[in-house]
Length: 596
Ligand SMILES: [Zn+2]
Image (tube, rainbow, N blue to C red; front, side, top):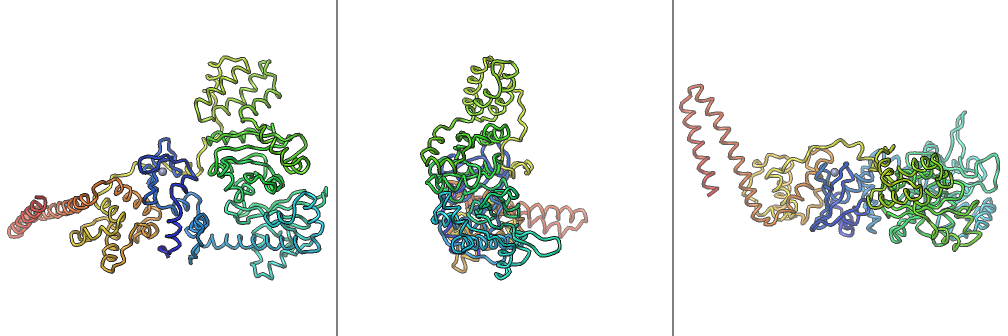
């Protein structure tokens, strides 16, 4: 299963530098690339990507592996899921693997039931006579049937059990709809559909799978909320989703900036009119997880707020997250009483483009708001403004930029710069510095121990398995103390005998020798390969390593014999002592001859 041809193709088509470069920033260092490790906290880069051999290793925490490993660890995915994601990126059909884990089997059911429900809602919208008003509503909002198709819009009929009955007919486990939040259990048993008589917007994850729904009332009703979303489930966690991300991602990358709006209609309308780099936060305060999702694609963000939510302190503080993540954030404010949807419908796309053009840097935007709220001419006002602005400035990672902001703040408030710098020093940031959350849980690790000659030899053999020919007959499996090294050599010798040597190390990544600790194997293998990569004269190194392995085994045998000799002497066993002395002398001579 591991040497599946599709896996080879995925690895051939994708560049590990591009892939990892999408998650963290990498700088060229010789033939390789370096960056800050996403798996442990660090200030100087010890994470290295080797493009020729398509693997990575962190010299700080020892994590290493190929691109599948990276995606598994970074996205917290199981092997088949990681392969599926990479296959999609590479444009290769994903291979099917048996034996999925129990949890991915369960979430597999949830994905399937969402996909099925999205199709059912969509078909109802297109075909059902009941959906007449829903269709009229969408047309009125300027969304034509082509957009319904693109965005998989749907309709939930005004009935209590349409979805439940359909699911039963389809053979879905009855608990699954409830687990998906699509139906609600009744007190006396049975259940009813959550979404009724609403236009349905599917909510997708970053990979384009439907994980929840948002339903909009067709006619406003004071007794019912205008928008209703699925509850949080195993798949859908609010604050971790950016609406429309999977459709917008290519354009965000391409244009190198991302527009963030609030609600789903704020997304649908601009997206359907040609703004393809838009995502919706589905709430006003952005979360760290959402910031991370955007940061993988671009460092430039324009937040679009309607006049009402803009300027709220909580909203503004959320934007500091972007600064901490070393991103450039600008704010565009819509005219009072409008949102992106209504603005575009009433005044056209040019009006929306105009608002975007008028966007301000977060610093200016925030300061503008604060000077309206506080009077900078009064002491109290100056203190109030400083209290809000200094934490923002403190989060700006670039020192030159920080200096510029302090200079301007000093000018506007009429406070000496030196005083502001002193105040800035005293500011204690409430939240932890921005880090991938996985890092926070990881304890600091001791430096990696130096590699033994056996390990370096294994690295050279893995790097180019045909090198096994050079050591065949010169080294015995028993010469290797490390069981994992032994397994590698054993497998290569077997391959040599049977004429099916692999021509690269790929298949070894996911096939740890029996008994290896989970995860530890790939880190070791990556270190061995990295060491091998750094050796210039590999042929000579192989000879030297074989010699060093022999020498240390020899040393061990001689030491063993000396222990026996001491025992024999203590017991006064003269014949045995003499035999041992002769044996030791012979071994020493053999070794001297070898080294000559
Ligand atoms: Zn690390």
